[in-house]
Image (cartoon, rainbow, N blue to C red):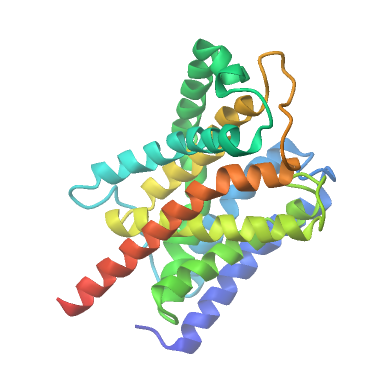
Length: 289
C-alpha cells in the first residue's frame, strides 16, 4: 500500500483534474438556470472524472491494474439486474409516496401517467433503452468516483467514511449548476444552500448504492449502468405522476422543492443505508475470515 502522503497527492491531482474543466464549463457556459448553453460541452461534463482518473494514473505511474474494467466476477449477473431494477422501481415508489402524503386531492390514477398507461409504459421503455444505450457515458463519472476516488480514500479512512466523502465531493462537483437551480429549481427558501444540502444527502446515499454494486462485482460497469438509468428514468417517469391528465400540476401540501425531497428521498435513503450496512458486513466478514 502506498504511503499516506503519496495517496493524498494522487487524490489532490485527481480532484484538480476532475473539477477544473467541469467548473470552467459550468461557469463560462452557464445558462443561469441550472444548465449549460453549449450542448457539446455540456455533453462532455460526465467524462471529466474518468479523464482525470486516467491522467492521474499515468502521471503517478499507478497503472490500471485496479481500474475494475472487467465485466465482473462470476455471479455478477444479479448485480447488473439490481442496477436496472433499482432505477426503474425508484420513480414508482416516489410516485406512491407523492400521492399518499403530498398531493392534496387527486388519485394516482388521475395523473398523466396513470390516466394513459400505454403512453406511460412507452415513456418508461424509452427511458430504460436510453439509459442502457448511454451507459458508457455514465462510465465517465463512475471510472472516477467509484473506480478511483473511493478506493484511494479507503487507503486513508474506513470504507463508510470514504463513501460519504466521495458523495460530498461528487455533489460539490455540480456546484456552479446547483447555484443556478440544477435539479431542485430556485423557488424555495434558503436558495441555493438548500439545493446544495439536498444534493449532498442524495449523492452520499447514491454513493453507497453505486459502491455496493462496484464492490460486489469488481467492475465499474454496473454502477455506470445504474447511474445512467437513474438519470434517464427518474425524471421521465416520476414527473408525469406530478401532473393530472390535463397537464396541470396537482396541488401539493408543500412547495415543489419539498415535494421532490419528501417523495424521492425516502427510497434513496433506505437503499443507501442498506447498501452501506451490506458493505460493512461484507468487509467485517472478510477481515475475520
